[in-house]
Length: 95
Image 1: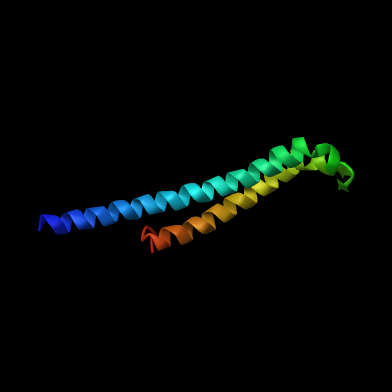
Image 2 (image 1 turned 90 degrees about the vertical axis):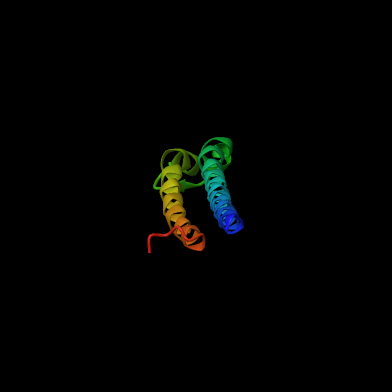
């Protein structure tokens, strides 16, 4: 009887570890995208992007002031949707 409990506990631990691996991987990807957009487009590549404009403002400035916020909101939406899939896959959804 003790072996069955150990196996079940092991499976639960493996499932929890898989869930957190998937969660951290998703966060790493999304935060990398946000960093690339906010720091990369808004600071590092600003001079290059300023050749173009959006709404009368240079594109590099726009990314620094507005674009990174819009991208962050989009990434939140993506995170919520992907987490629902991950939770369902690991049996942690509310449904």
